[in-house]
Length: 190
Length: 164
Image (tube, rainbow over all chains, first blue to last red; front, side, top):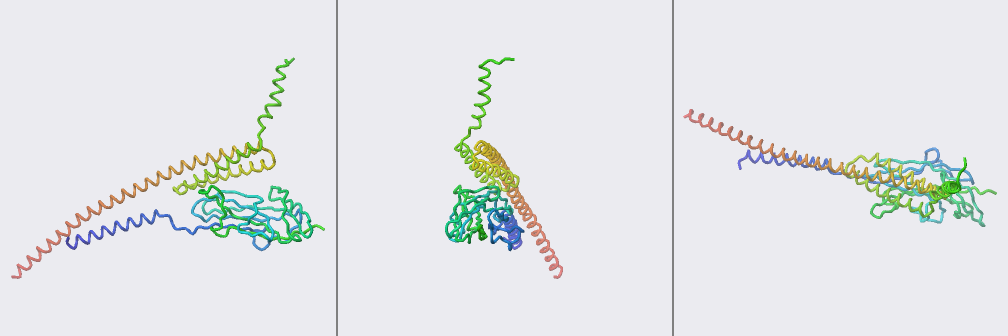
């Protein structure tokens, strides 16, 4: 093979390689930094004015948001839980008071208002128990969550993702910042 | 106008018994309907993800699926309130919506797969055309180069001859 033939074959092979590489890169899915995010905002859509002391029948408004930064749509559930300072969180072992479900498109942010009102409490010695609670339009009765002096309650918000392989919702702990909480003390009526 | 006794009996039956029978949905029936709707929604979600991975635009399907979820939420609320008839009706509606999403997702996935397959064929053909073009280019290019070299060699030979 003389020199010109070698050059032409080399150019041809290089052209084919470049074309094949361009096609491969174009059709390869881009490596994504996948994560989920859950946040809770105060009534002013900020992060500084969370309620600290809450009276009975006093409504507290907050906003819960979820952002899907995964590469596909996600079927999510936000669990709202009421807890005290003796129970661990992330995830909290208590059952949810209410849950909100939605399918989020890739890159979508879902935000919804959450109104919480403690409607009934009971004194039990030095403890106070929340026995009735209203979350948005859902009235929850027969609760029995105690806190000493009504102090150290917290609303916990957790993000759970539907897992098709187990056909159930799983806590999204490995996908980023997926739980939040705000603490409050109950103002106990004299 | 006078009505006969059998007619009045049938009328009373239809006014009292039939509506009661149609609304006699118990907790178990409503719960089962909700369970079926939930399963359908989960299946539909799987279909939506498949359609999305195949390259389809699933925004419309997601909106419809969220509609089904809201209806299912109404069913759960009715169940908690003891309104089993409404709970069942909402659940049936949610299931119907979810099944429609499943069908839509299946069609979209098939269509997206077909388009992707066509693109692959197009790329294959382009690659083949490129190779053929390269072959033709090489063939004629080589011939042209060889001819040019022959001409240069011949010219060099004539110049040497004239020098002698």
